[in-house]
Length: 439
Ligand SMILES: NC(=O)c1ccc[n+]([C@@H]2O[C@H](COP(=O)([O-])OP(=O)(O)OC[C@H]3O[C@@H](n4cnc5c(N)ncnc54)[C@H](O)[C@@H]3O)[C@@H](O)[C@H]2O)c1
Ligand SMILES: N[C@H](CO)Cc1c[nH]c[nH+]1
Ligand SMILES: [Zn+2]
Image (cartoon, rainbow, N blue to C red; front, side, top):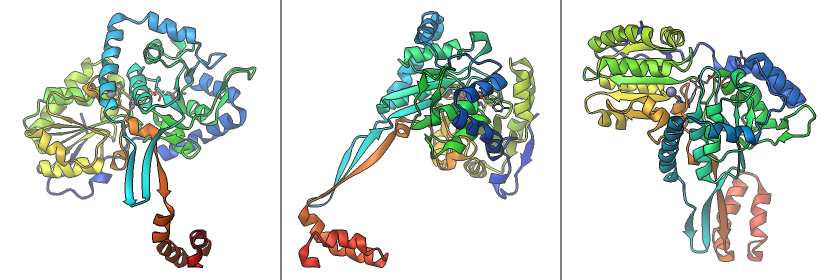
């Protein structure tokens, strides 16, 4: 049922083989530009108008009352609570190990540079809530921000018709479990714009969401487009748009598992991409047969079917695993599974991927919830240059430069020379006038 791309006999330019999603982010940027401008100019009324248009509901007050957050926690199913607490514990364990420490380098005696890691002051964390609800994404956003020491963090998630215009109750409960009490019932591009510019959150203009310094979190194509448009007004993490899975597999892979994993990510979005790269025609045929069987039995058949049949999904046949490696490197998937003999060795050779899932018992779904790794990962090829969300995403490295008089005197002639070469004599002067013997 998947498109088949036969690259046996050569890999021309694998980057062009699989178009990413049917709707390009740059096209979506133009579509949401007027909405972002309206939120900047009109604030609350523009946000509400967009919520009514795209979510079919908008509460009068956009900030979720703290009582509603507490109520969501107190009515949370105990099994869901236990699973969320397990996920939180594992994600905290991994992220606690990521915190960088300040470091001082002695460049010369009397001359040091210290790198101080300072958390971003205020961040907005986007939690999607269109086609599916994502309490796990609250965990993946909030835990690294808290581990980094971010002082002020706010969650935005779409209002739900079936929850009186509040975000999904499980999303609110996850916020409560993590101690987050500033939550807004706003989704899509309007949420990103509201966080970036700040805005009144009730009709009287008496309550306000202060602008944030940085926005992180995944979302659909419009959320991704708004983040790209507002980059600069705020900092953003990597673009984390419609989900992708690529699987590099050989004959040793179980087609039932491979098909299940491809479907698992197709379940997110009709624009999700599921890609199998293999030198084995037998595996490709078996996976295709298995997909037909499993897709008809899965809950979100229509969404999965659309994603799998879309031009962004397919089976790529290659001569051997080395050629397969070139294809997956060029593709730079958000999630890459390696289901081969010697899977770890192949995984260690991969250059471009958001996260790599090694062997038969590390499926992407494990990482989505409970591996301890982060599931907010770069999509659309951004894994070529960006990493997934981590503690580091919320820290800035500030250099502290400290030179004594003697250390500056020693290097002063070089500074003056370089300033002269660049025809910026005032730069040289700022150093030489400190030392009368130089004038
Ligand atoms: N990469 C990751 O880490 C990661 C994690 C979880 C989810 N995801 C992805 O996030 C996405 C979530 O998408 P979603 O739709 O379920 O939730 P979402 O919250 O991202 O989007 C829903 C919002 O989109 C807006 N919207 C809907 N139609 C619109 C239109 N025509 N124009 C402008 N705005 C519109 C609405 O305001 C709505 O609130 C999926 O693609 C999923 O694969 C990625
Ligand atoms: N696979 C998604 C993108 O990495 C994350 C997720 C959340 N819930 C289920 N899956
Ligand atoms: Zn997932």
